[in-house]
Image 1: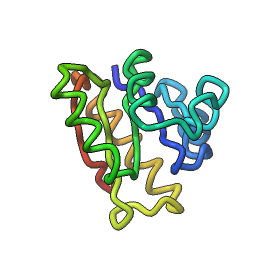
Image 2: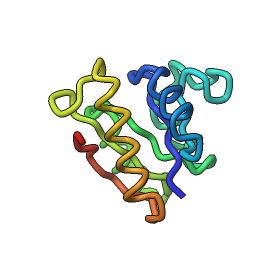
Image 3: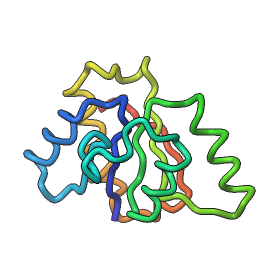
Image 4: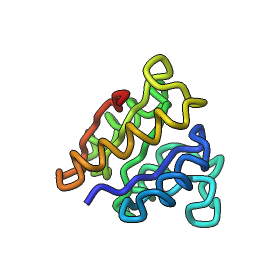
Length: 124
């Protein structure tokens, strides 16, 4: 089952709105997940913690995350999936667009195997 962990660049309001409207969708904000313990922590540690919790990371970070994914792959280590968002496709301030796109992805891809999967979130 697809469960989301929103990176710290994504407003925690997105997780709140989705949880309120769609309580069946497991979604957490890095701001509140594990009492905010992972805020400011390096991305590799976050990916490893998310994998242990079977949470797919949702992030705008297309600079530092891809090299970490390569490193994990070379070490034969798994992650629970990464969903990249492009600033030009869905602005971080477009809460409605983010909510719609995440909900659509969950509704259409919930049953897929997300281990080591990487996708780009598309606007809906």
